[in-house]
Image 1: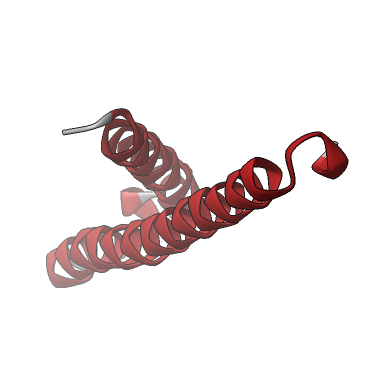
Image 2: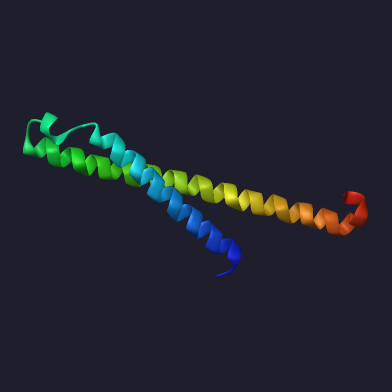
Length: 89
């Protein structure tokens, strides 16, 4: 695993954790005591898990795409700089 892949994986993990925390905090606004039946309590928790999983996946994919795009642009810029030498600066 090179440095680029390591950074991608770490950032993806950190972002997923952050999204999970945000969703968890948002769902705490729905107090289980406010939900009348056991079935609704269970479905609220399962729904919250599904929402957190969905959003963390989508946002993780977005961040990963942005990192790859940044790396590609950086590589192009480096190639241009090498081709033109001091002229590119």
